[in-house]
Image 1 (tube, rainbow, N blue to C red):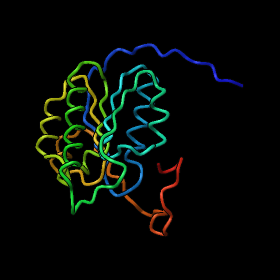
Image 2 (image 1 turned 90 degrees about the vertical axis):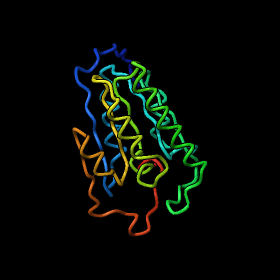
Image 3 (image 1 turned 180 degrees about the vertical axis):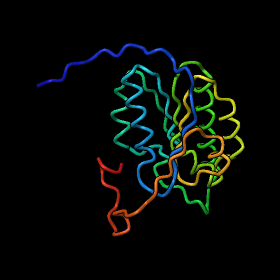
Image 4 (image 1 turned 30 degrees about the horizontal axis):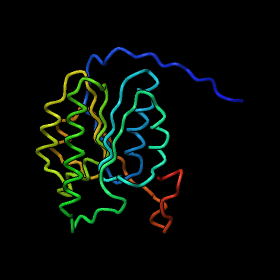
Length: 186
C-alpha cells in the first residue's frame, strides 16, 4: 500500500540554538546527527548539512535526504580517503570550502540547524584551522542549532559545546576484517 504524503508545516524557529558535538572512536556520530535532522525535519525546521571529507561517494543517507523538502546539503572532498600524514592542498581547499559554506548557511537566516559532518576530523588532521571552527561557533546566531561530528574533537571545541557525546567503541566488526556494508555503514 502506498504511503500517504504528509505536508510538513514550517515550525517556528528555535528559541535557543545550542552547540552539539558527537565525537569518539565508536560508530554512530553521523547517525546521531542525522537522527536529529530527521526529527527536526519532521517538525518543519530547516536544515543545512555540510559533509566534510565525504564528497563524490554515494552515501545512502544523501539519497534519502535529497527527498526531504526542508533539508539542504552539500558534499565536499573526494571519493578517496584522506591520508592524515599526507594531506594535499586540494583536500585543504575542499575543507575550507565546506567550512565557508557552513558559515554562510549558519549566518543566512535560512536554516534552524547546521550540521558540520566530520569537521572534527578535518580540524584534527589540519585540513582546516581549529581557530576557524572556534570562530564559527562564536559567530553562531542565537536561534541556530550547530552540530559538529567526527573523531578527534579538540578539547577547545568540547569546552564551547553545550552537549558532548563521546561514542566509545567497545567492539566493532571492522576489527575482524568486516568492511563497510552498503545500507548499514555507508
